[in-house]
Image (tube, rainbow, N blue to C red; front, side):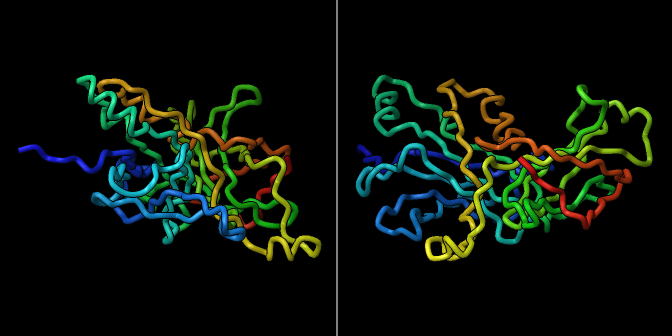
Length: 285
C-alpha cells in the first residue's frame, strides 16, 4: 500500500540555554514572521511554529495548501517571563524542490541540515546558579534606555584583552552578564576582578519618537531585536557539530550595523557574586 506524504520538514528549531549548553527546559515562544504588506502599522505577523516537546519546534512544508514560506525566513524566539533575551534570526531554507530533488536522486537533505540551534542568553529573570560571578546593569543612549544592546566584559591590558563574559540587552536596555572565565587569573583565584565593560549598539541609533514624528510613529516601541542573518547549514551527511554551533548562533557576533561604543567603563566584581550597577552604561557610537 502506497502512503501519500503531505508534508516535508522545512526547518527544525532547538532553543539552547547559553549558560547550560542544553536545550531549554522551560517553555519559550518560537514563531515565523510573515509579511503583511497591507498593514502599515504591522508590516509582519508572527505565526507560532509547531511544538515538539519543550524547547523543540518545527515548520513543515504543506504540499496541499498555502504558499511556501518567505526566503529568508525570520524566526522569532521570545520568552515573556524574561528568563531569556529574545532573538530574531533570518534563515535561508532548503526549498521544497531541492528536498524533493535530493529524494528523487536516491539521497536526501539530512534533517540536521534543516536544524537551527540558537542559544539564548540570560534575561533579567534567569535563575542563576549559586556562586555565579556577574553583573546586572542597563544601557542608555542620550539618557534613554537603549534596546537590544550587546555587552562584553573584558580583562587584560589594552591590545591583549580577553572576553570573559557576554550579555544581550532587552527592549528596556537591561542586561545580565555572567563571567564565564577569568582567563589567566583562573590560576590565582582572586577575590575580585577588574573588568572593562564594553557596549555595542546600532549605528546610527534609531531616533526616539518626538513631536515632529509622533503622528508617524505614535510612540510605538521597537517590535523586536534586529534580525541576524544565519547562513544555511551545509548539506553534509550528517552536518558537523560546528555547523550547528557557530559564534553567531552562540550570540557572540553582534547584528549587522552594530559598533563598539566610544565610551567604556571599568567595574570591579566580587568572584562568586552578581553585582548590580545602578548607574547606566552609556552607548556613544
